[in-house]
Length: 160
Image (cartoon, rainbow, N blue to C red; front, side, top):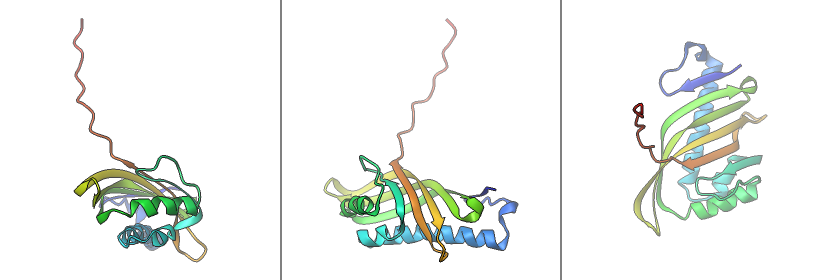
């Protein structure tokens, strides 16, 4: 059974107490990730990933399939200054009897680095959170990529 949530339009089937608690916990897991990112501590960020997690970072050239690779990405990425992360769209779907959640959406990274101040990179994300035996939600998979540029408008071809 899938349970879904998108922004403010929560379906009525997603309103029992347990489902709302799961939703709150998964949303808080993403907030913890954002807070950890803003500490600039790669160990704090990496601690939010499960031991068997995989991660394809926004500017990574390959996928990381262990915590060592995940940490290496964040050691480099967190060299940016003035980091802000704003979620601009979100969608949550639960699977495996509520033990896994797919949290997808869009976020905006704002930062300063050697390329200049006040840079903004819109990106899209997918997190798969897994509920641990102790009730904690850890990241099992994370994919992030820069938002593509808007395509050119289509022009209808007129008949020959």
